Image 1 (cartoon, helix red, strand yellow):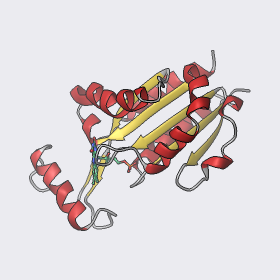
Image 2 (spheres, rainbow, N blue to C red):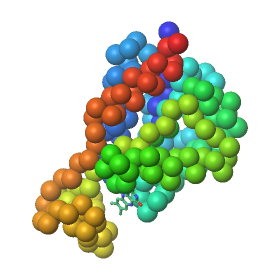
Image 3 (tube, protein in one colour):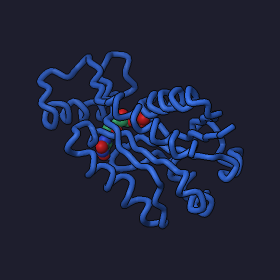
Length: 187
Ligand SMILES: Cc1cc2nc3c(=O)[nH]c(=O)nc-3n(C[C@H](O)[C@H](O)[C@H](O)COP(=O)(O)O)c2cc1C
């Protein structure tokens, strides 16, 4: 039976939601799947990557950066990752990819250029739109909240963004990606 490993880094939970959806789809294809939040699960405990038929990495973007947990994981395991590039998927979840015309730029900025430094080119890459949570329950507070309100108004043209959840994830794009990832594994 084929085995997949799904690892993600998230600050506000958006990337967890995407990873959960991808996991559901690949499991439905009969692929045995393990999934870990890199912040909660020590990277040392993650088994050798060659034990899996496919590995998927996903991270949210803040101020142009991956999560620290993803950065550390990729740096620590880069030689292993290099050996499994043909069975490796990598995606980012970011504001920039919220518009279809900007997806290519987001892929280039947040994946290709960052992985180029370590000579890594995964077989499958994509960038998904993100979420800006401005509900009253949101973890985005203080000055960060003010910045996000400014972004919603100036970049997205939302006149009254407060108190709402602005979700730009395209679930069709995410499902298509999950199917492509399954096809990498089950050849
Ligand atoms: C303070 C802040 C900074 C952000 N900076 C960027 C950025 O530099 N580029 C971008 O494309 N998206 C940016 N975003 C959008 C996030 O990538 C988006 O909210 C995503 O859903 C976060 O994913 P996570 O919850 O999994 O961490 C930012 C969001 C916040 C709240």
